[in-house]
Length: 179
View 1 (cartoon, rainbow, N blue to C red):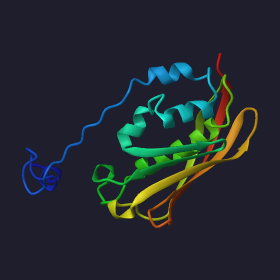
View 2: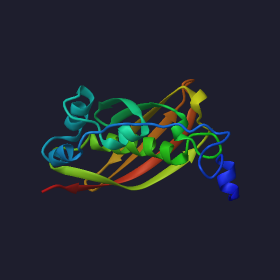
View 3: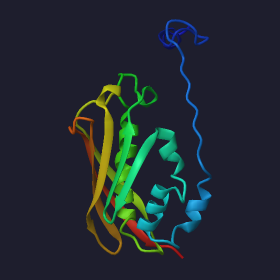
View 4: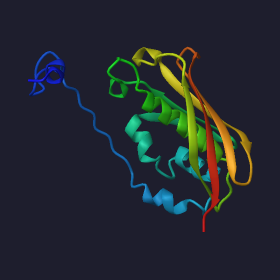
């Protein structure tokens, strides 16, 4: 048995640590993808909010919940869970970055007319405090700082249940025409 196996409760998974499991479902994302370019970004986001269209699978994967969208602003909420944890006992930076990227990118998306798409060029993240299951409801709000013809700059702020800033990000997005 290796040290890693021993730390995880033995080679067969039995031992001091009780295993947990999680199951989730998602809708086929190809339906939403087919609408990119045919509807404005804000229209697509609002269709997801109303339930007319399913949310992207990544939202189900990380357990993100409530979504809000106005032109140039998007908010998404999530409650931290154990399955988000890293080995240090806090929410993994990748999960936090996913929330920040979602809010910033969707804020840009909310400004786009039909026929225009986007992709993230970069994401600069600053982690300001640990996020745990005790952090309460996490709210991530993204806003567009500047939008030109080919690029957009957005920022996102992640706050905990007490309204404290836990992480901040800026994101540059490339805008492109969809045939």
